[in-house]
Image (cartoon, rainbow, N blue to C red; front, side, top):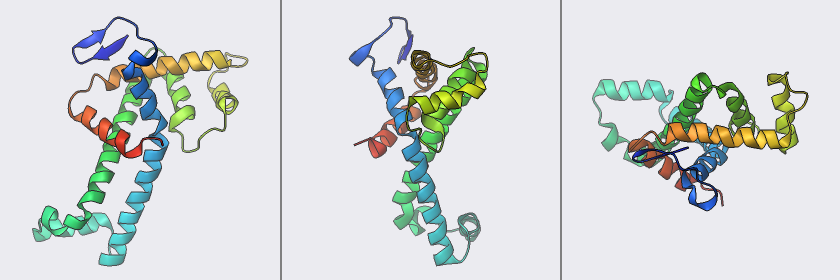
Length: 187
């Protein structure tokens, strides 16, 4: 089941024509890169502000607002960097919220969460599928060993669950996702 602009599409799509499914995969494939780059950008901004103004960013912004300065005009040179950080932050928050919603309310949410977490969301990228399977085992003691085919089936179902949440968002969310995908598209 997929979600389209006009609601739920009951026809099951496979292969090339299922762009929503492929978009979800693409979003998860760039998650680590976006998170890493965002942390770097935030750290650079913090360090630059501390060097230039002798204070941290939050204190600096508070002082600007209290002084009545126009951030748009006075910080125009930082605008592009701040916008990139903001886009990345919106993307990460959107994915995190969708995954959290799936985890809490989907009947298989906990299972799908751990599959997505070890496959895409954790800070370290696994070397291979066996490493993911090893990390999944403690979460599913009822299984002697999770088979590769089971892992791939669960991952596909997790993508479907998160995709149905993401594509239920309209307008702004789609724009943010498109911009971030363009910024971090795997080459």
